View: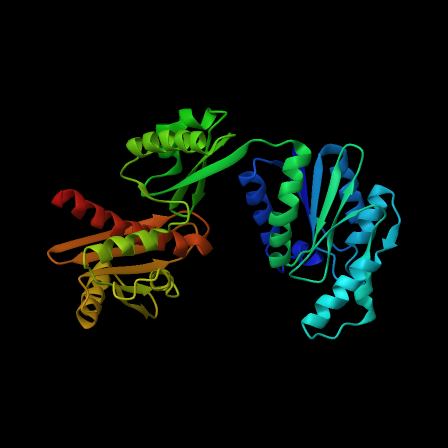
Length: 391
């Protein structure tokens, strides 16, 4: 039950925009229990699109394309899919009427080139697009099928959920579903995590995989089956064991962020957090401000240049804490350089001082993100330790 996704657009190949459509489709297929084996990106060239579709049809049971269904000359997907499947394009008067009615309802003028959107490969089934003008379509071949969607994300997402996923589950006879849980860890390296839970990474179902993100490691648990309750139980069993082995490192799950979890814990304790930073462009304060706890995060100060020493970081952080009425202060200074970047990180609270000088051997452009994650983990860990001390 292999599926291939083809995202179409020269702007994707040039790097002008991120391919968010492929990511969204991949997640939707996973949730629906449908296996995605290949992802291809191709520019707005009809012959190259047709070649990509032909190849996909030769190896996949279903092919999903997105993009290139607009009304302009550089939207060639209809023509390309027609070529790849050996069918002529045919005009669908009922689709043209739908497009005209929709444009009239929106009080928008439309030139005659919108008629292009009413052409489909011969025999194709139209997929209604109630939130845009470009209809999608399905072409069924002998052993496979092509499902063609517009590239506008909100249009693609609606049509994928309402029409494409149900069609694929029915055509492919899919009974199973995928469910996932992502555990977020900090303060330990990927090799340490692998050493403690490596036996789980060889499982077939559920599967466990690791992904590193500049000081944060994700552990993804994915299970496939036919019953929601059984999947939840399998994931829960593995999650509990991983947490037992790595209890000191797991700070959140799924959509939770290190800054959000940290400030939520600080809010529960009635703490007020302030930060001072050098050389980061305000990234630490920016992430804390975006976490949505305005009464807990009471202010970030970004200073020019770099702090001369750990002592100067402590002094400036103490002054800023007093000015903002904070109960916890974090100071961070980052010097991004090759072969190693250097950071000063300080945490201050009543009766406590914690100061660290850390080095980072990764790419200099990643040093700021790494250092911000280390500083946030320092703050999160201190709140955890207070919980254990009071228990």
